[in-house]
Image (spheres, chains in turn brown, purple):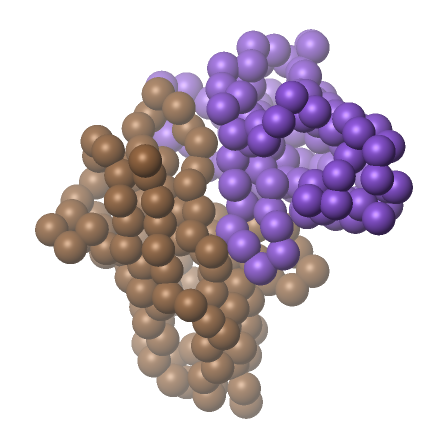
Length: 113
Length: 115
């Protein structure tokens, strides 16, 4: 079956540090890959996505590249801010016939000033 | 409002009670999803509708769980004879739906606590 494994947290970084949150997946077919973010007190929001191999998704300074050879979709940001403190979820959809998302367990990120 | 809304936001039930959770999707969204998120975990798929048709209910954990979307808009997730292990946040999401991926927009969730 489909699964997503992501870096366990919590992760605590200082402001302006470099961020990497690892994500690997197992899926049949050719999945689309996503990062969702949940800010404190808010609902899940799509952060970025990539729908085919070698695609790079980017948004709000975050990036992730779809690496089929390593089945990975690691999230990176060059300089984090306090406002990036949130829980980050890696997720996939295995094919377009059924759009259900399979999520990882989430990584809680705290940025300290 | 423009987003997905869910009610109630919080629900406390005694073990054995029935509960009903409501989801109002974004107007015009064809696809509607229910997910269950246990504490400290990622959301897990429960069921999926395209308009009023329930196309996938493979994630429903038992026959105590039932979902409907009779007019292709508002959806209700019903849990009968609640158990403590049903305690979780129940998330609803909607999307435009089609044969290609469309972004799922999530509601704020209903936090269910079963005592």
